[in-house]
Amino acid sequence: MRVAVITGANRGIGNHWTNRLLENGWIVYAGYREDMGGLGVIEHDNLIALQLDVTNTDSIEKFVENINGNVNLLINNAGVPDGRWRNLTEIDDEWALDVLNINSLGPVRMVKALYPKMLDDGLTKIVMISSLMGSIDDCHMGKSYAYRASKTALNMFTVAMKKECIEDNISFLIFHPGWVKTRMGGDRAPVDIEESVEGMMKILENHTIEDSGVFIQYDGQKIKW
Ligand SMILES: NC(=O)c1ccc[n+]([C@@H]2O[C@H](COP(=O)([O-])OP(=O)(O)OC[C@H]3O[C@@H](n4cnc5c(N)ncnc54)[C@H](OP(=O)(O)O)[C@@H]3O)[C@@H](O)[C@H]2O)c1
Image: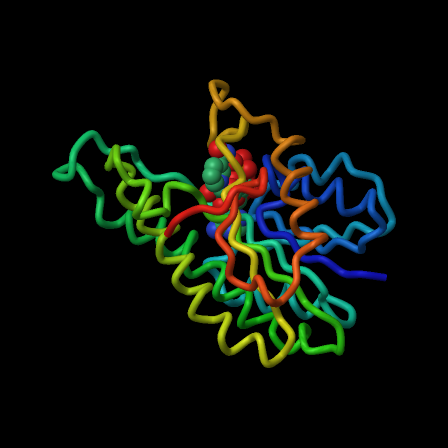
């Protein structure tokens, strides 16, 4: 059976990915930082819900130790918004560094920790849940400083990593999930979680290593860097 790992799986987009992959016959190792949230109500033999904070290497090590065998899919979904500071003089250094730590380095830590489990014969896929807000080309409005920078950095980490990983048959997809109705996206967001995850799953199914590192929206539209 195929094995997936998902970070930030207790709510929002990550929780829906968990549900859909279980429905499709995957074994899912689902990480929650503190509160099991939506994972607590899923009754499925193939769900293994484990504590996971992507900023904490001890927590990551314990999580990985609990995984039986190889991993075929990693979904780096966990993320935080920034302070939406009204102007640049309000940028909070400490929180800005936390945002970069969670959104940019968290996914890299997960790739490093899981790497030995991603070296079996088949193609392993790594999904980075990035954002259109990480696109330099699309940055017309400015603001959201740390969030934007964290997703741009995530994109660059990913494109840089892909070169090394291709040799080991590991491929990356960088997604903008759309502006989605979640705690982060808010009620005014035009895209439902179901539509976003369904779109990303379809792209994931058809993804090949020739397209490793593509930056693409949930509906298939490619995004400029
Ligand atoms: N919603 C949108 O419109 C939108 C648009 C573009 C990109 N995205 C991206 O989509 C991803 C999912 O966001 P969402 O909309 O589903 O937001 P959400 O409902 O706020 O969920 C965020 C998830 O990340 C987890 N998380 C935060 N810090 C973590 C840490 N240090 N370690 C492990 N997990 C952590 C949260 O756990 P806790 O419950 O413990 O806080 C929660 O499960 C994020 O990467 C976000 O940047 C969202």
